[in-house]
Length: 122
Ligand SMILES: [Zn+2]
Image (cartoon, rainbow, N blue to C red; front, side, top):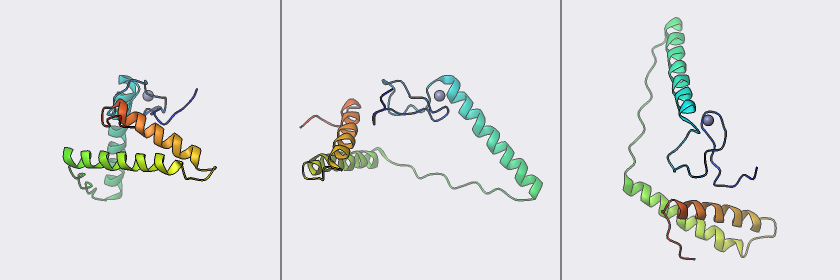
């Protein structure tokens, strides 16, 4: 199997996600999603039991900060600029790094295009 930058892997079993999987998809199947959920629940339960046995109070980690759509859009613009920079730099890069620049730049660019984040201007 040819694995490209666009090949994303299931968070549970590590198999490739379907090629048409949207950007938010993390699991190859509903069964894998359920399996991961059960594993998280079991881990939390075991951690709690272990803490009880050891007499430790578990402190919940602080929740992650909320990221606004505007911040995400800013990240995508940064990624777009970095991708263009990598592709431009490939022209002047060494023989050793030039192919890497093209693979990374083209891979990221094609994902951004496919997801509608980037307009094709090149
Ligand atoms: Zn899976």
